[in-house]
Length: 201
Picture 1 (tube, rainbow, N blue to C red):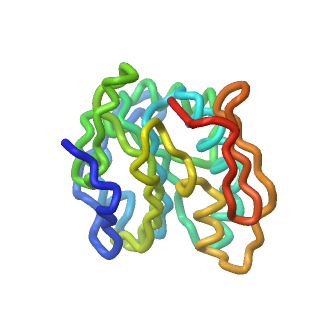
Picture 2: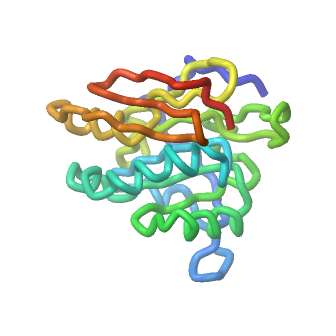
């Protein structure tokens, strides 16, 4: 499947799927309606558990800003990846992300329905999610931040700060340094982004 970076689904309903996730050590089936219906939810999707950008930039900042996001009416913050339930469960514990919900899209069904399934075979990962974030209100997508269609793994607008700025337009973004691995960073200051090197998985 080809990925169309311009294919925003704002205004559309989220896909109806059944997720399989580990909850209290038990494999549980969770319908998407249970997650999104009647609730305000932030979901951010990333290419893979334990990948450097995901582990040292994307997830930690959402963990850090979770209380602020909830102050603006967000009921739940979801981290979604095309990974197995056991992998996502272990990764959440490793990240100490107790205020977030890690949601495995093991078969890629939700990601494919969102038009965000991409082939990462060139880095040995197979089909994964393109990086994006979205705000969902009562099952409908209010806002999406989809990373630009560039080579590698761009990480420019799907971050927690951008989502919080959308929820609170008066908020001034300070300087935020996010490391993907030694020597590779993104510096965000006042909404601008500067790179120390190209981001890759």
